[in-house]
Image (tube, rainbow over all chains, first blue to last red; front, top):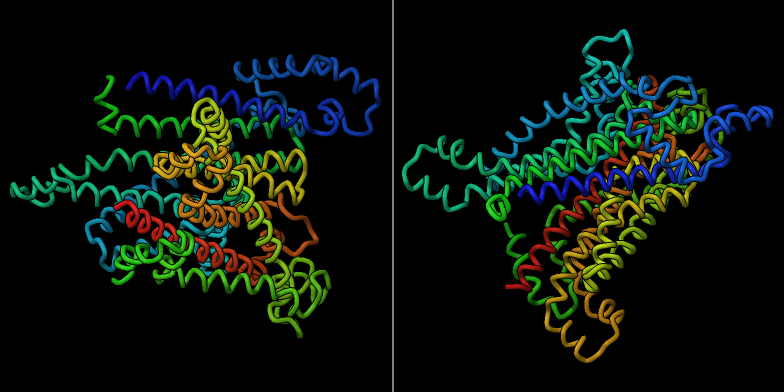
Length: 311
Length: 297
């Protein structure tokens, strides 16, 4: 198993490198170059030329890429064009906010989703199961920003007026409710489905039958025999959903004007702030790859065939 | 519960007519497929017929910004004072067209890659799948935003980016299905007869992976609708003054508390459309499982 994990890790690193190549190549396709962009259209040719020298833009593209990559590895993501500060400095606050938002959404969604999934499995083909199956299908279909707007229309100022629909610096903790709820709705359905499917499979297994025949108390059957065997696949789906959050957070932050990486990304695109766009895309892709990797490893570790073979 | 019984029995009688027809029939046996078709049909109808029955032109000013209860308008004016109902009726077909095109192109390309990778195996399989893995490392929306931000929001680019992001996902599924089909005797027979590879892939393999293919098409269509809508909402899709549901939501969300209709109508339409498409997909995938069982056992 260790070998498999090492292979995955190496492949993850390789993917990250490929992503950096794509991100760098994409910015090379821009009309004009960085110097022109920083100084704007009115700059004198001499000044642009001087800045080009300063930014090493006369070097071959491969050298520029290596310099850029070296900077990233050392934690230097460049300087933002729009407000002339280090990208790392611009990003530190929003990254924390986004991670908090994602964490809260995961914390809100996971226990409820697991419970609904488990109850559906226990009440298989009865009213609750049908209702939850239909509910997850419906919620899973709707794009997350549409879920957010529906929540705003329902609970926001225009509807019941319980929670504010726009994030502001002076606002209280209640302004977190709608964004967290939106993301929780977006994350939950696959977890519910996986939990249900896995629990059904486990409950039909021979060792659960055996425990029941032995006369073990039904609660002990559930918690000691069934649940632990359902953890693996479910944990994998939870991790995959967290990876999804890294990208899904953008539209939701934009909707609620939440000051996280998603909003930074949209602002950076608006201002054509290339270093910032590069940094955020790399960051999100990095988190995405990392969490996917963790999901993979959990999946491997939870699979007895893999765990026992070639130890 | 008659539906699951149907799923097991029907394919046996339908198989000679080809798996595609059998799949649709079996899927139609589920109530949810019918509901999905009705919901999707309703929105498609609005989107297609809408422009012809709209009371005004989409760029005509009929009210003050965010004004409601104006004479001659049902839902009032939008952020610029254009008729909300008219813009709603005009705004659907672009979404459907872009989503349909990107799903179709993405699934077609993904199928070619999947069948080739699954049939040829070896280094080609490895290269195609590893390239796919790199593409998968980008969250779909982020990839689209990166490209849009650099080249600028262009219609063909929206379609291309979404199609490319679908490709590896479809290719994975079709490759799996192909690898099962390749084991079958009729493929070996065709190889023994000396049919060219492309004919084996097109005539022997492709017709036998239609079940997962149709399910993928439904799934990708649902995702495409979501991504096109979200790009419009983020202002990275179609540009003003086009009437487009996603863009409408973006333009009018500031006035949501005063004039909810301009946001609620397109939001409801997108929600109903995606739910409908997903219900059909769910019916198809349930039917596909039933058919596969029917054939194998």
